[in-house]
Image (cartoon, rainbow, N blue to C red):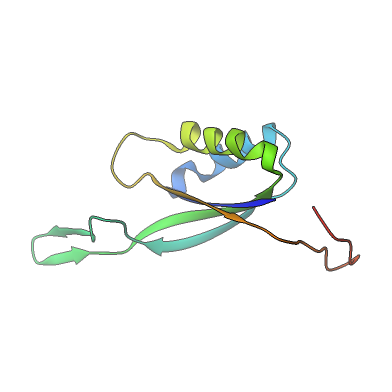
Length: 105
């Protein structure tokens, strides 16, 4: 299992989530976050804007679905301008459902 964390533009969050649901991903968590990338923000006059609203999508997927999920996030989340976001993929050793105690997805 892999965890995919996608930090994307808020206006793209619903489009990306709907596209991911279309391939049958079992679950998705959406969080509103703030941050900045390599640009360290932007300066307009004397004001520096160094934190921008973003949406973080978290999902745990089986190994065989990782590439498909990443492709969907890249295609539907892209505007073609700086600040479109990042995708991070990490290994998930185990997962448990709290209500039932079941192990796995």
